[in-house]
Length: 216
Image 1 (cartoon, helix red, strand yellow):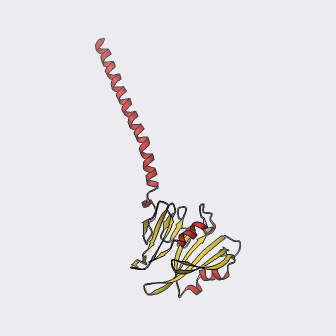
Image 2: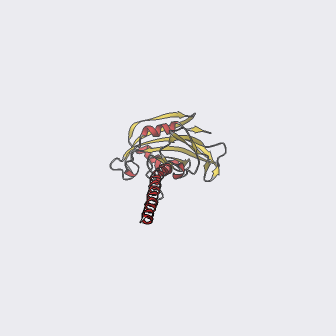
Image 3: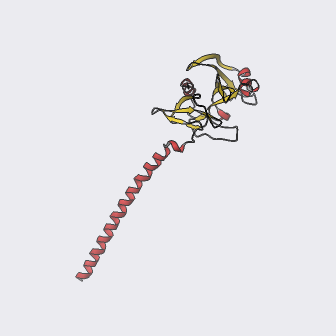
């Protein structure tokens, strides 16, 4: 009988140790994935990498570096500007939410910059828009880092010319030369890109981005 009781006590002790070990492992696994997921969501590597380069800024901003064009290094040319650290960036597109491409030319990013050939500018959609759209406020001319920009604050009527799809702000900048060809540098903000409401899409943020431009 004593031998049977000893075996029972031995088995109970083993079961108790196993229960404690399992409990410890389970409690440890509950904490680890939560922290790992939070870290993963904030890694800059989870964002699309801009084609021209990106540098760290302060805790609230990142610095976009435009230093290559069509795969060619610009050497001493190019420019930089700051954008909110919590915004998404893909090449020349910027948005407070993840950027979606609906086709080759339809992107829901509310902020982007572009380079338009001076030879094609007069027949471009941009030229047509700034010539024909109604104004939200009068046109103005501003200096940014010593460069002259024309600022247009427009009411966008979309391609159909019917009901307004919101406000558009355009900065038409100086001529820049890359690879022997001349371009206009353009920065554009849309209140409702592709008629889509974008939470956190504040024109004040766009104005700060443009005003932070630094030319090399």
